[in-house]
Length: 418
Image 1 (cartoon, rainbow, N blue to C red):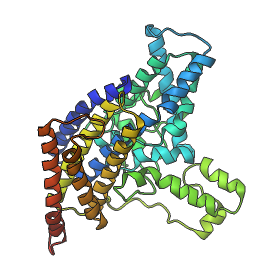
Image 2 (image 1 turned 30 degrees about the vertical axis):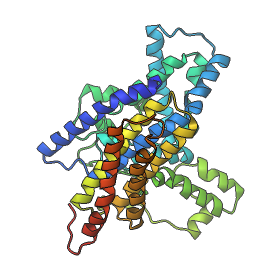
Image 3 (image 1 turned 45 degrees about the vertical axis):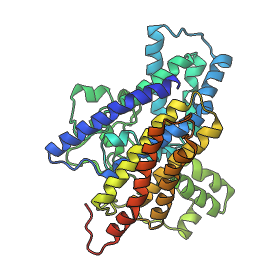
């Protein structure tokens, strides 16, 4: 496990502790801060982003390291406090422009949109990260490589910048006076996530909000116009793969339908929402209107408990997967990652009420129960202790037995959602 994965693994229990504290505080205040389906979707997308990151290191770190070796103007020491401070400041500046372009260039928005899709704003939203950001995001940090910021410094300051932004995703912390004028804060970032006209495409800073004040993209939260969260083209789904693909797919369709080759290119690099005139005329979309309610398909209490249990088990597997990355090869890592992504997709389909999801979930838990029982192994793990293999078989075997009852309860006339 490398430094990045190790820090994320150790930070994860802290994230969940703070999410629990936020949930308790919100309930004591009588506020509706969380919904189970939304939180599962957001945290699941964060888990997928970590799975994908294992396979995209060549883009996120490899190219950076190559540029440092071949193009660095200076050989900066990795044990210098000024180098660390300058690297963090420089990273935050580069992040500002990546973040801003992520709202102003459609192909970058296609990756970044994942972080904005939740119609709630809480600490689980902070974990809602894209799985495709590595495709182009690395370009914005090459200036640091040219300046000679060492790879080990770059990796750590990137994590510092990312981890800092966790705490600003909450409605439970109000205005912070002078702090709001200098740093990215909960108030400033609430405005950033809002779809209200006043707040749209503002407050891009990661640690410092001073970049927004300097480059004219700052807006202050207004109590008379409370933020409404989400995107102007709502996702309306708990499918994590569709969450990552929706803007790419919509843009590819517009590019296909465009008659002019110039428009086929422009649709990718113009601001989000831009469409060629001929495409907009032939395939119109409704104008944006402030949402009347949140996406929230009904789900009974028993199914909620089941999905939560399976989600917790999948998160445990993600942690195990990250611990395996230093020793296991692609033949083990790829199918294991695919299994976890598929599991999250099936749970999303159950939360949406998809009929086919019951059969697929039954197959998934049966196979999961049979794998250690039949082979005594679990993906990259060597021979399992007999008690562990038995526990896996019992948990997932019981899950398979519970599914018919859960489905019957969900279909029962008059069944009320929790």
